[in-house]
Length: 484
Image 1 (cartoon, helix red, strand yellow):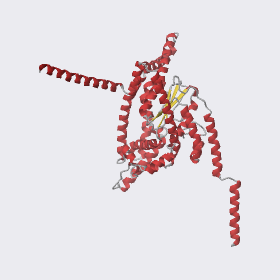
Image 2: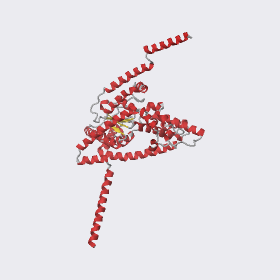
Image 3: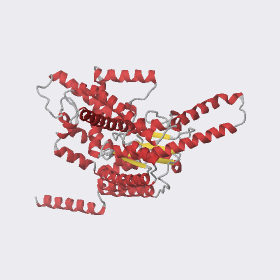
Image 4: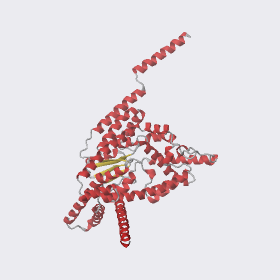
């Protein structure tokens, strides 16, 4: 019996000695990860971009998902840049060629590592950030919304067959092929079909409950979603990883290992956050989704004004070059026709554009875009009824779930706070410049940036009508007195 105790004591002592002499694999992994992440961060912070407030030849719109960036793309950038100036990888186009002539605009969900493929000294970057808790809600809801569109099919096999047929015929690209939705939507789609199949077998429940974010008979509950490995990899702290250039879609070779290190050892996230903050400092523009009106006005004045000036100068130079060109041979006529069409299209986009007109176009465009998006969302969510994601429904989400989202997105919370500070400083500088340079004509332009021209016309008309009525009544009283 005593020998047994002695043997156990000796084994325990050996284990203790081994732990002291040879550190645990966890400790070894941490040291390896710390060195790797610090080395990457150090090299990333060494880059020094000059004149970041001036628009360069290429504009890279780094679109963080669910921040309202689609609105900026369609209602600002599409109004400024003609299609021939768009680089061959803007959202839906999966082949990117930075050598394409006249490539001036790249708008994509790709992360900052895309800069490794771009002429860095000739590229300006813009982005928009959103409150991280709101962005998680929106990502969850959009995943469900897009996945629900496929519930018109009897099963997943039918969905896959149909998708292949449609793609081969149209040659187009769907949401399922754009990062991060190419991961999030199929995951959610499979989940929706499995829950629908389970309801068919068991029959519908007597009561679904009144919390759309916790209706497990119909859709994956929010709590399960935010704690799933897919969400931990793609959604949480997604803005920080995207701005730093470390998403699972990164162009950096060591990105996968760096991401693994930061997720396994959250304390190393501070190095990624530091790099992301530096990236924001170097950007031409950083917008805030929640400060929608101010962000749009600043985009028009800071980015839009420079794009207009740049394209008008380019169009003028092209026009002068065309006038001085010698006669062309027959073999070059086709190529020249294409270039001429491109030049005229570009000129048409910028020739009569002003910041005021850009804001007017934006107001009209955003109203139409929101209406069509709302209709599509409503139609999709009917397929997962009675679940319905509204502002009121969000308010009923338990406080502990909100705290958990907050905790899981600690890096994004810090980056968002920093982005708001940058936005406030640049917004104040913009207002000061506009105020200092204001002439009657520029003052009118500033006013139209803040208030749409149509609203100003209606207001002036209303004032005129009130004055006319008052004058008419006063004249009527005078005539009455004269008759008496």
